[in-house]
Length: 348
View 1 (cartoon, helix red, strand yellow):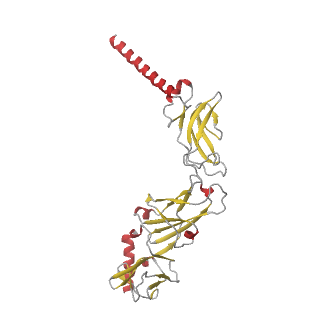
View 2: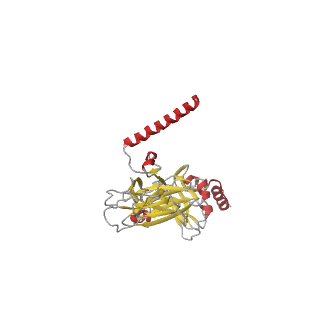
View 3: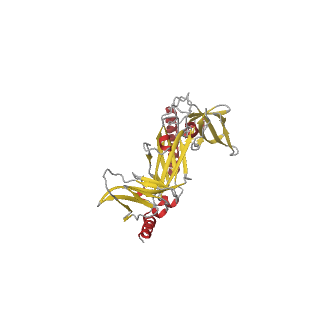
């Protein structure tokens, strides 16, 4: 009867509170395979000698065929969902330590890593596709770099993150030299607790495989007789010197005459275009392309250069400061002429 009560109390706890206590990884936890006859051991972490009492949630643990106490420790086999949760060992009214019994689960969720450059850090994103768990905030996730983490070593230096709309963002540091050829893959291990199940996945890759630069900067469009010469700068986050870490660019543009879209790997593009945008990638390893820049309107012709003031939205030649001042003066003169015309019309 007590075993039935234990089963029901565990199921009730899961249904009412889920894993809300596990927004962070607990200090002590044991992972078991579902309905596995091989037992797992829950350790009472204490220096005190003598007998101890084990509880599950708030009830004493019922010793039976699949739950046995061996001194300070508890041996559990044939683990199923109602048995998952917090186990505590006690001496009288004093709680000595607690251990969570969790279930091993497959890790189909999405893990993606990206490096903006060959500098000493990169980022990873883990996405929990179990929407119910995300809505309730019932996910604890951590990421580790290196063999110690992929083998489950206790000295792994884990990195934690808060979730935003089911996405967990991590920043990791590595010690690879950007000036030598890579011979060893990076190993990133993600662990997540979702509703008392532990998801674990290791991803291996070379740093060069995850390089994706930030979007470049479109500096100016210099008008020639037959074409436009586009000046493009590398993003500020890209590795230096740029002469060693070279980027190749791709320009996408819209033709004025028919609105067709064209692309060019050269900085020289057709003259009669209405707008353009640019993306970049590592020229040596042909990395993933960066995101496109925002579209920029292209302004050419001497009569239109006064419209080149907003560099964020337009691409046009670099103008001397006195030219912009002349634009202001011309605008002021035009306003003055319009006011004069209105005054003459009114007086007439």
